[in-house]
Length: 347
Ligand SMILES: Cc1cc2nc3c(=O)[nH]c(=O)nc-3n(C[C@H](O)[C@H](O)[C@H](O)COP(=O)(O)O)c2cc1C
Image 1 (cartoon, rainbow, N blue to C red):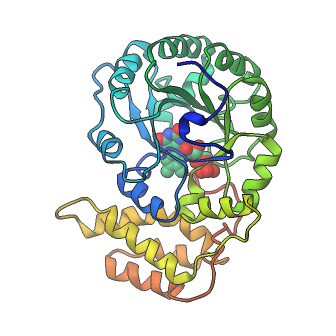
Image 2: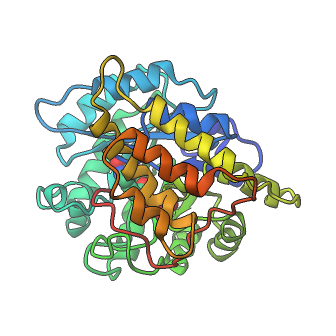
């Protein structure tokens, strides 16, 4: 399938495209379902699927793709370094209802990069060249896309990487504008994303720190990208995609009231619980992971997060949520502390 330089294959006429970032242990079927109620992105990425010699298509990822309740296209992401097995799994995935297969070139988790997968591959451009060549040749029924960081320790090899991406040619490039060493803490380099936009020859999505509709507009201006990919910002604020659409259309975005945010938290609790009997304590711990992001936008003193981190059962959890969210005031849900958010540990 040729690279047409447009994103019509996403069913999109006008840009910018708004994409849900792949997030391990977050962007599963229940999370897709919840996001779609708030307007949701134009395209949904899965969590990454690890590919090695004995890999099969993960049951949860297959189910998300087959049951995709969002009415919007899905992209499945692979992480691995063996061209033979990446192609084997890609051929299997091409039979499923996905619009594209995406390769992860960014994961900063040591357990991944030390095996020379994800972000670890950025130290070996020749290997990336070989993998992209094999996958580009093999993937014929759907699109082939790449999500990358700027480099491993620094961005000195960025132009070489862009040359490799241009050579194959991929259908879409998402750039998380940090190096692997930068994890989630450093400034996002929107200038280097802009360089990808002008040189790579395929559409580019800008990724990193899109946490408000105003900021989205600024990042689109700085990068010239055809769209945005959003991760932590939409865990914090699932209304964000519609707010961005409103600002792009020259309308005022709508801020959810506290009570609507409370309903969102309740939906997360109920719908992300595993089916059947589940252990309440584990579900409360799981909620703390989502609320690490949401909590940054609840109160400037960080009291909400301070208390949430100390609860141990559902009743305590609900009391804290009600204390902070059971009100009618509009909530912008932007992070109060503009640190380059807490390190989530995975990518
Ligand atoms: C909890 C979590 C899990 C992630 N898992 C993945 C993943 O599976 N694949 C991937 O390419 N990136 C992953 N990322 C990185 C995000 O897709 C995104 O590139 C990064 O968070 C920067 O975007 P943001 O500022 O909008 O969050 C993950 C990030 C987080 C916070």
